[in-house]
Length: 357
Figure 1 (cartoon, rainbow, N blue to C red):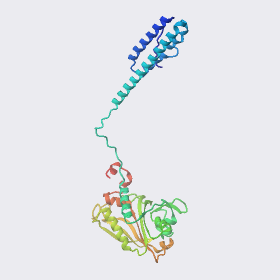
Figure 2: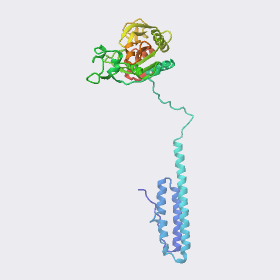
Figure 3: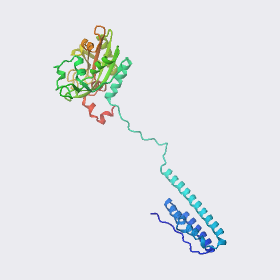
Figure 4: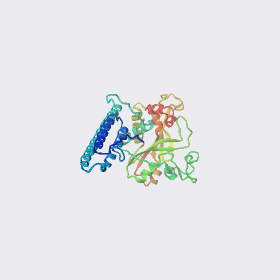
């Protein structure tokens, strides 16, 4: 509770009342000069203008003044009250102005001083490569699609000509979510081929990036969760030469015109003929090292001509239309572009690693 300054009057007639008013006025003005804070000013105001003290109390005893002197005393009392209220208001304004000045002085900033640069985050190297790949394919007229990570086995395997009993459908290789093996975490982005052929008008040019899951052991080039980007073209007169030309263009735009590639025959149930594409190891230049497991090459994608059974299963006449498709691992592409020697660095979120990009 703030202390109150109380001014007491002792007169009982008009002369004494006049003197008391002048005395109170002098005391208040002296108190105002000493009031250095808003709390002190408020205590002074309550002490002189409060309901039961000082000036107010004098005015409440006006009845004791002879009737003929009351008008003059009333006018004097009101005049003193008005002057004191004005003086208190002026002092309050002065204190507020001084407080504002002190605050502004304390908070003064030198706008000519250099600011502190905020710490900025860094885009993940894999997503840098993904954006580059998207830009390349969009420039070729491709559409970017997205699909579910929790997939039906029918789309992940059956409609891609991967029959029951195929090793890829084993529980040891695939993360199934149901006992009947009907729902799973997709093992590839290839189901987007089927979804595109079932829903898009011909011709089709699409790429579909996303996460995929396989029961792989973690090492320098493998992970149970990784990213792929699927690509497919369906049109009349599409050939294997178109596929090789497109993929070589992609790799050279990513890694440089001098990048060495090779295509090896392979087998995928949903393409015929099929191949795998390798790039010469960025670490050893083809001599062999732990990163490429001594082979001098790193596999980056699988590809091939879309199998006629897959086309027919999606309602497309394989005698009229043909197509090619590919699926590549984004992490391995990032490793090649940024000379990353261990896939695990991409997933560990080590700030010292990420700050380099």
